[in-house]
Image (cartoon, rainbow, N blue to C red; front, side):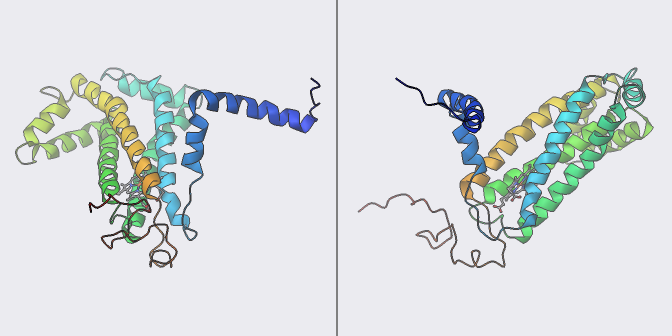
Length: 261
Ligand code: HEM
């Protein structure tokens, strides 16, 4: 059978498409990514709706720079401060990675608040997105806890005394206070037990929880669709992707559970 000769352009296309098709046939991953990226969104969304993605980008930067810092940081009272000095002064581009992580932490928190403000002002927390708001609140709490546990790690005077205040404040909470402060301190004094504990919480427990929550958060964003701005016609009920459901509330376009009879 005679094979058709491919033009150079077609050869390049083949070379690009072959590995993609190979992966798709064996995993279905490409279809999943397409489903995630190419979705229908209301025609009148605006720049404020990019704040969630900006927050996600800030988190990814924190995870990457944090992983690099973890290669050089030593989590014990004798070496923590000097390892940070080593990163800043000796390691190639260490000052940059550390600076990005330190300032990026503030950027992450500020963006999270701005995104939350956008969701609130657009009324995007209402039915059917209440659960995603609750997940958001958990993300905010985790983000703040990440900032608190990371602050101790440089082990300088500011870090130490800020942590003393933070632990004592937690100790004043009703009922659970003493247990929380005991758990955070990891011993009688703020010393090697505390720093090891804060490090484990900062770089394993909380990031793990944040990643799991972000996956859930984005799953719900995809499932429920994006809200139109409150001033748009779509939000007012015309041309919306969200149809009124049988109980009169605006819900998903999917049919609800069947009624008997
Ligand atoms: C790590 C932190 C967070 C990340 C990475 C994140 C990411 C996102 C993304 C990418 C979207 C879709 C695009 C957009 O609407 O901007 C979104 C939507 C949403 N987020 Fe977040 N978010 C975070 C924190 C929060 C917080 C703190 C809240 C509220 C307490 C929240 C509540 C919501 C809600 C209700 C939606 C749906 C909005 C709509 O349908 O218009 N998120 N989030």
